[in-house]
Image (cartoon, rainbow, N blue to C red):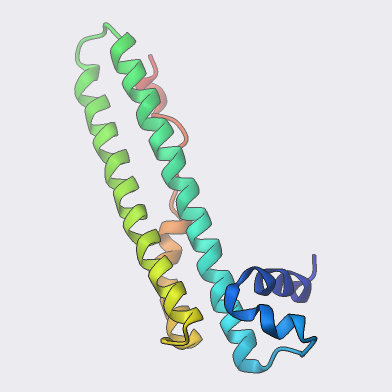
Amino acid sequence: MSRQLQLDVDVKKSPGFNRVLSAGVALSTDERARADAVAFLTGAMTTLRRHIERAEAAVERTVVIELASTRNGASVERDETIVKLLEMTEEREWMVDRLEKVERRLVNEEVEPKQVMALEGGVRPLMEAADVRSPPSDLAA
């Protein structure tokens, strides 16, 4: 899908921009910047929510392994894994909450797209961090 087509699709999904596309008017530079900012926020929130879901699933698997395991000594490692997963989940939930607020402010034209895109440096590391799909292999035994 071309960048323009993807941009149009993202813009159509954004409540504040439906009027522009339905009128058949080309996007101005400012509107394009807003659409890019909305697309960034939407992508970031989707990625972070996926991380949250995977971390929650990993916590559940780790707890099941803990209950089924009879090995001594592994309990402390599993507890640490659970704590790390819960911390990661909490951090990402906090970030998603903040990004939702920023998106609402952007749509209501309370912040500029440039300000939103300036957040990318702080959000990108969370999006690119290795998300947890399962507990470490040494805990699965």
